[in-house]
Every structure is written in C-alpha cells, then in structure tokens.
Amino acid sequence: MDFADVRRIIFDEIEEVLARIDSERITALTQLLARSKAIFTTGEGRSGLVARCFAMRLMHLGMTAHVVGGTTTPAFSERDLLVAISGSGATDLTCTVARLAREAGGTVVALTRDEGSALAGEADLTVFVPAKIGGTGSRQYGQSLFEQCALIALDAVALLLQEELGRTPDDMDVRHANLE
View 1 (cartoon, rainbow, N blue to C red):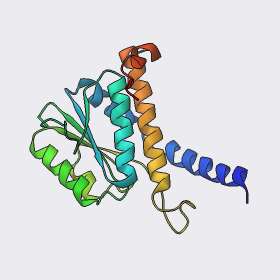
View 2: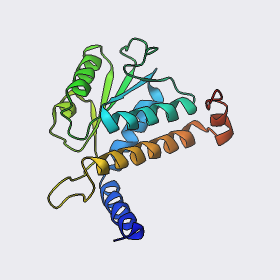
View 3: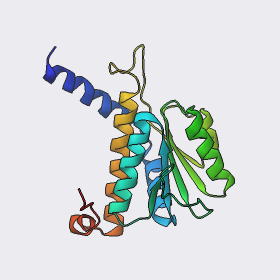
C-alpha cells in the first residue's frame, strides 16, 4: 500500500459517515447556534481539539464562543449553548460538563457515535456521527474517523452560519489572531 491507497481508504470512510449524518439535526444545530447568547465547547483528547477548532471558527464568525476549562471562560447561563463532543459518549468529564450545563438551564448539543450514550442522555439535541470502529468498521486507529467527521461536520455548520449571517472572508479575517 502507498499514500494514494490509504488516502482513498480514509476519504471513502469519511464520505460514508458524513452521508449518514441527519441533515435536519445539522439544521437544528445551526439554528440553536444562531440564537444563543454564547456558545461553549467541550471534549477531551482529540475530540477536545475538534471542540477548540469549532470555537475558533465561531469566534471568526463574530459569535461569542468559549472553550470549557479555559482561564478566561465565563459562567454558563440559561441563554447559552454547550456543544459537547465525545465519540463514545461516555467520557466522564464531558458528560459531567454536559450535566452541569443542563442544570444551569442552558441548551446542550452532543456530537457522538453512540445515540444511547450517557452524553446523548444529557443533550437537548444529539448529532449522531455514525463512525464505526473496530471489526468491520474503520481501518484507522482509535476514534480517528469520528474525530475527522466531527470536524468536517462542524466546519460545514460554520459555513452554513457564515452564509446565514452574511459574513465574508474579509469580515472573518478581521477577527483572525494577529499576535502570532
């Protein structure tokens, strides 16, 4: 096998999963984001990196976005939205944060590959990312397929929001970091 072979394997797996994500749930997520006072994102490991990427893109769109656990993250309130990402839907800290957000009266969205998970049980909306692992599932290690698909799905949500909000790349560039 060479790079072209594994590239095709990965792209085919991603396409199969993305094609099975419910577009109505993506639309619902986009609407929730557009009407939220602030958006908080959370996840652990590579899912946490996806959460951070999404918060960054929301900030570029001019939305108020925070990553849970950051030193400048403010209090979560009933007008806020939490986007919690966990492939298994069982990551202890992610589930705890989702429960706390729900208890604070806010809205919780879960991205997970397990619709029956503890995380999905805490969520007002679950975006099911049907990334199989092991056995006849992905040939990639661990939850790579879930994480790749979650990132692409959330980038698609960001593009939908960009269109809905009428933001241009120039509008977004003004918010891009300039101290790097």
